Length: 130
Image (cartoon, rainbow, N blue to C red; front, side, top):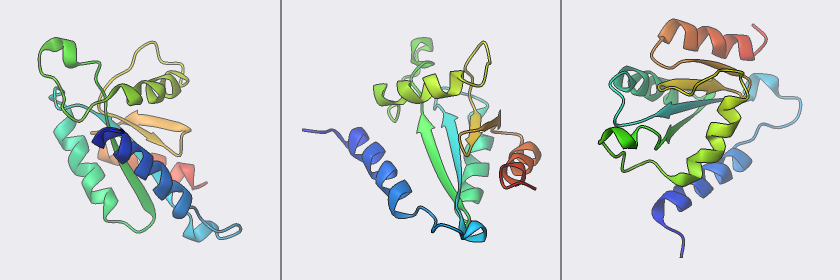
């Protein structure tokens, strides 16, 4: 039987499909903003707050993805799961020699430090061609 974390990930994928924009309606498209975070990350609470603000916008699909690779430091993130490892491979495609938190990935093509509000907002605009 699937566990709660698996169901949440599956539900998130379903939301992406259901809320996908209609063809030709660029002004109505959602911008996907993924925050890679961890409860063991001291820099993540400001990024969590920014994502919370973005989630109130009707043009943003905000996803918080808890990672497990900081768990070895002794503070296990109860929201992290092995299912997030695939997302780590995607994040590695940005050519960085390391993974970090808080990292924001916008539309799967731009990445920025999640606690840098100005850069997050600038990357959202850039992803829209602005």
